[in-house]
Image 1 (cartoon, helix red, strand yellow):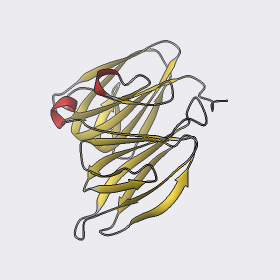
Image 2 (image 1 turned 180 degrees about the horizontal axis):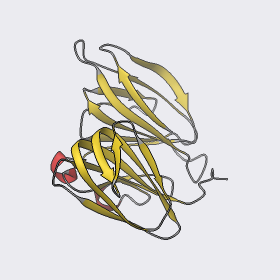
Image 3 (image 1 turned 90 degrees about the vertical axis):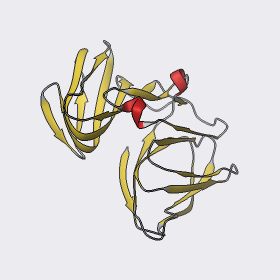
Length: 198
């Protein structure tokens, strides 16, 4: 599930519980303040990625700490491959230079290359694309991909996509990302026929 949220200054979501879900937040504009029952408290801004593994149960709140500016963020829920784990919290910053004209790994099962770890066979990449910038992702056989355009416009294998658009990719082989205009995207590399864990 991908929630595209915009929260007015001073607004937010009071403390509420989750369990057995992988939840990550990706801020596009503004700032988001997080507090949880594990004792974590932080403010995330553009470039930051926050991952919360709810496991056997966690409660958290999210607010816009600004009194002047709205916050725009994506929150993605991923069904984990196991249940009842110890809840955990992770956060990392990925600079724009790491995503400019390329797909930067931000989430993976093993925390590879400085990414955040997730309890699922999924890899998430983030990219920023302007005119003249191009990246190619090779989708392995037996995998699916999902592209979400967070802002701007791009072309994926010559198919034009605009802010808020998504595309499922099921054919293995090269996936070309180009034609960007102030574009920011997330690309999910997923195992086929996703099912909840036992």
